[in-house]
Amino acid sequence: MSHASTYQPKTAFTRWLDSRLPIIRFAGDFMVFGTPRNLNYLWAFGAILTFFLVLQIITGVILAMHYTPSTGLAFDSIERIMRDVNYGWLMRYTHMVGASLFFLAVYIHMFRSLYYGSYKAPREVLWMLGVAILIVMIATAFMGYSLVWGQMSFWAVTVITNLFSSLDSIVQGLGTTIVQWIWGGFSVDNATLNRLYSLHYLLPFVIVGLVALHIWALHVPGSNNPTGLEVRNEAKETLPFHPYFTTKDLAAMAIFGLLFAYIVFYTPNYLGDAVNYVPANPLVTPPHIVPEWYFLPFYAILRAIPSKLGGVIAMFSSLAVLFLIPWLDTSRVRSARYRPLYRLFFWALVFDCLALGYLGSQPPEGNALLAARFFTAYYFIHFLLVMPIVGLIETPTPMPETLADSFKHKGQEKPGQMRPMPAE
Amino acid sequence: MATTIDESEGGVSRRDFIYIATTAFAAIGAAASLWPMIDQMNPDASALSLASTEVDLAPVQTGQAITVLWRGKPIFVRNRTPDEIKKAQTTPLSDLKDPSAEVMGATADMPATDANRTKPGKENWLIMIGICTHLGCIPKGQAPGDERGPYGGWFCPCHGSVYDTSGRIRQGPAPRNLEIPPYQFTSDTKIKIG
Image (tube, rainbow over all chains, first blue to last red; front, top):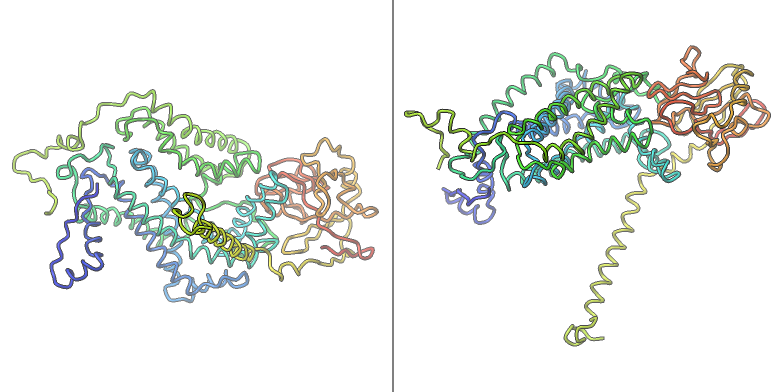
């Protein structure tokens, strides 16, 4: 959907700059990018996610000014940030709750894509870059959590790094070698904490790079929309991103920001685990190790498989399978709005992920373990069987001919009513 | 050797050779400079130097257990009761999930008998790395009053692995028996681990 640049430099200086570094032209064209007029509020999560990425980097850089990555001092330096540093409590709670809501927004953003078929051709690379961002986000959040050096931090690092020791059952000693290489010792210790800190500072900038590619890939075909139909007539079917969608995104951000501010100021520890306020102790494992809420579905999958290597493979596969979705969906219709059968399975997947999340917080025994196995099975069946088969057997409901037809009936042609037109 | 393709009439020219030689040299150089960057993450000299720990067993009474640190890892030291020893020695090997004794430094095919996991004449002392072989939690069973699982040994609270009185895996997701570190008795009541 790339079109000719509309930027006209107006002053002598901008004309001079434009012929040397056309950065204003780039930003201007970027902001007036043609965007389907029928986007709903679920499309605001891209902007919300950008906001959280910037917020996490700013608060993170600030926290790094006060944090000490050393096993003897890490926990105390966090407490000093909370008690002594001016507004330290605000920076830390913003960073901590920000990570949680970052994941909430990313999960909504992904389910939005799954519902409206935003991963389908020609947006496969866009979707795959999104999955790559999720994976780097998971690594970053995990490393950040470890820096607190509380009991849950320490044991989360121990359990997750030990996942690699499962490779011992393929090649004797390989897993142990890799785990000791990750630790820089024979147990999780100071060397481990230091490298996690270094990488926790690096990875957000990798995410920034991936986000730039993600937006680039978005700007080639343009945004999908609730009908899943391609834009055919730019003038009738799209509006410039600014001011129409910047305004809409800001409105959505204000509402999401209310939730964020409520948690930060009224119940900042609601989403965390109290055990992480106990300093790390390598000799005592907490009775019940649970990750933060956003990792619970993956943790449930890990524990559902009764073999160590099998559980690890299943957990990594639950992310890897997302890369294949554009090719697993055989339907010619993008949006679930016109796919009555797929829509049911979509909500089944939402329920499945919520159920796995709940089961990940429960001890893996008895009925909870059986249920986790059932929902793990459905997770993979959904992508590997339901998606290809439903696409082949389903009869889609009637769709509008063009994107413009989909909003014509909403009374826009009434006399005396003006349609918003792109600013020329 | 000709210098251009025309001179060499379509065969290999000196320039082709230079291209291949340069690229190969650069590739080898890049690979060689990568190794220090990878190896720097391995356990360093100070971690390797913490290799041995001495433990005095005299204060540990029959039925008691202590935990010591070796290379940052908890080592379970238990003075087993005659009943616990008997249970460990009479368990048929066919009941075990992991048939290997899991003694550090020994071959993997050493059978997981209780005799192989202790020292001759010191069968009451069981010395193991107290790290669950599933995902690295510390099993319960060292402190009096701890849950010790249906086999009377150790129980991992994280994912429910059950170990017997010889520290061998009997139930749950852990794949291997608790590992036996290298150690010797330096006197009747002293051991050196590592």
